Image (cartoon, rainbow, N blue to C red):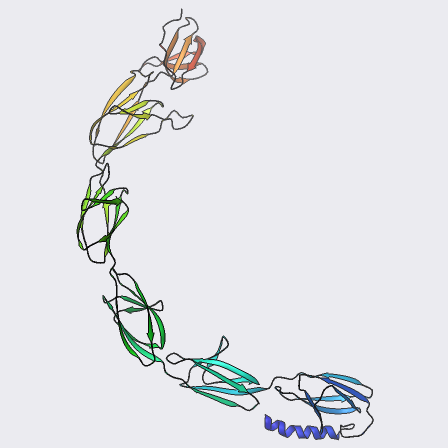
Length: 450
């Protein structure tokens, strides 16, 4: 390209100078040319050169070929036709001058980093403007190299860098063997491990079952062959103990250690007898051997030593006792419901038990039920208690009776004064019907009113 320009430029200049009104003729100026551009701009026209701004040229009309140059920029030619009395402004924009720079390394294949950008792998050719440049050469197995260079002109140049190998060898062992090895948080396998490394520092971590993790910094120098052995510290022996259900007291060799779930630590190597004790369950017992530095876990599935009773007592408000101890009252399922909620009596020892139901208006007022409870079994028992819940008064006699109201309608009620009795009474025969609250004290039924 430069050869073509060297040939082409004299021909163009000669043609320009032969044009009427060329720079070499002494004709009265008829046009003014004002030229601006980058710092250091030089203007050439034919055999004349202008190097000091401001560039305000008075020129006769005609055709001209200008050459513009400036340090750090590629030359530029521009053809201009000027008319008489014309005032022309030319703002010159030049492209930066680029130089080819070949960056090569021995061996090839190194990455060239300029600033924070990887520009390529050697050998590579860079097209650069004039100025100062720097970069880093990086290649696995070789020391990183910083390079600096300048581009002062347009002549191509070459930069050759010999890289220095920085390989070190290391064999990493551990006590015990077969520990998992991590180098800079990357798993590489189990010990013993041998490999080649770049010169530098590495974070080593070793892990093995029953031992505390070990972390160290390993420093390797170029050309070094280093054997390195690390000794891991055993973990204290221990037992993780759980039970189903939870909440069992744990005894290790008859010494209480806590309540499940629990962990017993700092146990020396030995055989241990573990017991799990929980009320209502058979005692669980196991034997376990603890090895040095190892933890183990055991789980007790406790077997109930008791049974349970589920009572469905009707109606609500009935007092309930178990073996003479009050247990509560039957409760309605909801505010408007006649049904009651089941009552669970848990952790009942196997054998015969007496359930007593009572109410001041019941007939009889108290009754016992004998239930046979077996281990891990549930006894279901439905108990209906006859309870007076209503008072009525007859119109004709004024007699007041207390009893159980079973059903009612607008015309009649179904009523009974004792268990097994159920009669229909028309409302036209009754002066009033009064329902009794469950906790209201009982009155004595009267056969007549005086």
